[in-house]
Image 1 (cartoon, one colour):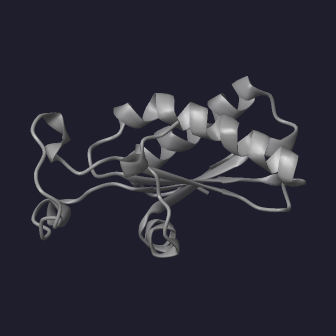
Image 2 (image 1 turned 30 degrees about the vertical axis):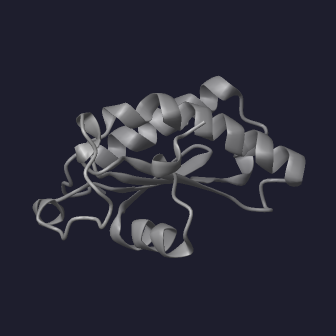
Image 3 (image 1 turned 90 degrees about the vertical axis):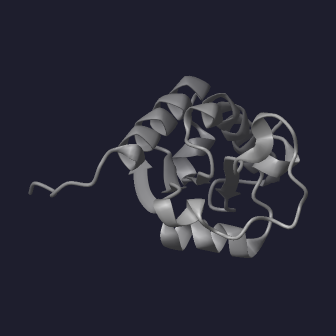
Length: 136
């Protein structure tokens, strides 16, 4: 499970990540990644008291979107559990303050765990890569 501080829960958090982040689709998943910029470092501090230790920086947060197009409730929950486990392993590799939304596409219902992991890795690598001109 992801810790409560690492989960996106509010609709406004999802909307901000989807609108402001980079979108990359690979195979059965689409990743919306919002990396912290220099402006985020000077943002107003949270009203919560500072904790001692390494948790003083902004947490890396992740959310999941698995629509009914993927399948019934059982299939959607299976896909969501798989994606949550895959993201938990990769979340520490992202910079502090990163917001990640993973949207499952209908092929995710039949995809093997290894394929979901490979698609997620490819999408994250492409989203983190510097933007360049697209060749046609």
